[in-house]
Image (cartoon, rainbow, N blue to C red):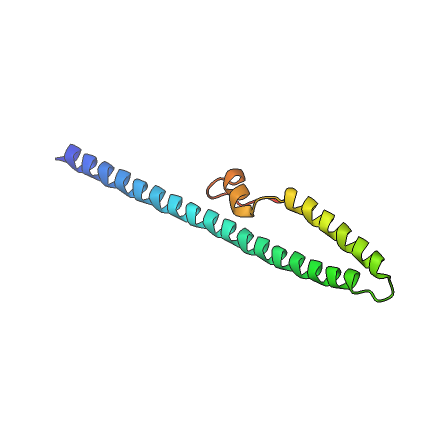
Length: 111
């Protein structure tokens, strides 16, 4: 009877340990997802900021009445070249890079 009680206690302890491990894994996954989502929000904010800054710069450069129409056209062409360079060198959003770089439950590190 004592051996049966010990085996039953051992089985309950193993089940409790397995439940704790499942809970810890779920918590770690949720923390990892939250970190990735926060980075995605920051990425979107940066995109909006860059777009707004570019919009203001383009207006300033192309609407400068102190320059000749030819100079403004040359500026517009240079902005177009810059835009093509930026389009060809964009990085993927953080969600794609973080899932590769950050393990579940780890905090993302930024250099």
